[in-house]
Length: 411
Image (cartoon, rainbow, N blue to C red):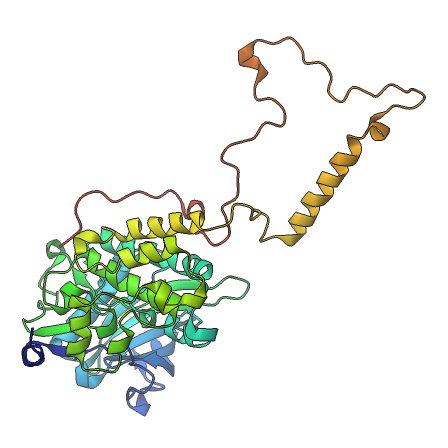
C-alpha cells in the first residue's frame, strides 16, 4: 500500500492517545452552572478533545458526582447520540470495575452524562508516577484482570468498546483498599446490530476511522468489521504498555497516523523480552500478551474472558511454588512458625512422658473398630483444594464462579 493511498484513505476523528492535558476546556462560566436542575458544576477534573469532566454536587442525592460534558464545538447530533449510547451501554452492564452511570441528557446545546465520582488518576498518569513508567508483572496482573472481566461483561451485553487504552482506565485509590482498575469511558462503544434503534448514532462513514491510533486493531484501522477480538488486541497493547513502559511499535511514535496504521496492519511488534529485557517478565506472561497482538483476529484469544484466564494461568505457572500462601500476612507466618515449634516440642519424649513413670504416654489412643465407610480421612492427611493462590495471580474465587462464553464472537 503506497504512502499516498494511505494519506487519501484515512480521515481520523481525533481521539489521540496524547490527548487531554492540554485540550481547551469549556468556558469558565460552566463553573457554578446547574445541569438538569440538580447537578451544580464545581470544578474541572479532566477531559479530552471531545468532552470535559467536572466534579458536581447532586442536590437530590446529596453526593458529589462526575459530569461529562461534550465540548460545544463537537456537540453535533451524531456526538450527542454517541453520548446517549455510551450512557446506555454503561447502564446495561453492572460490574464493580465499570463506572456507574446515573443519567444522561441535553443542556445548553450540548449533552452530558452523570457518573459516579472516583478518586484516582487514569492508568496513563498512574504509570508516569512509577519508575520506568511501568508496573511489575504480578502487580499489573492483579490490577488489570478485573478490568478485563468488566470488558467481557460489556461484550456479553452486545457492545464493542473500540477505544481501550490506559487513558480510559481509572485507578481508583480508596482509603484502606488496594488500587482498583475501573473502565471509565465508553465514548466509542459500538452496539451489536441487534441492539441498534432509531436513537443509535449512524454507522461510521467509509473512509473515517474513529480510534486512538496507538491502540487500534488492524481491522479497525483498515475499515474491516470489528468485534470483541478487536478489544482483545487493544487490551494486549495496554498490557504491553504497562509492562514495558512503551508501545509495541515504538519506532512509529510521533510519525503520521498512516505510518502508525501501517505498523498495526503489516509490522510485527517488538517482543516483550526485547522491549523490557530488565523487567523480568515471565515468558508465559509475554506469550499470552503477544498472542493478543496477532494480526488475524482468529489467532487471538477469542473472548476477553479467555484472555483473562490465560493470563491468570500464566501468572500461577510463573509464581515460585515455594512461595507461602501466608506471604501477604507476616503475622500469620510468625504464628504458623510458633505453632510448628510448639508441636515439635510436644512430640519430644521429655514432653510427652508422664510424671513418676519412665514410659511415654500414647500420643494417639488406639482407634475404635470401625467399618471402612465410617473411618473417614486419616488424621493429618492433606486436604486438596485448600492451598492458597500464589501472590500475583488474580483471585477469581472472590469474584464468584466464571462462566465461559459460548458461541462465536459478536460481529
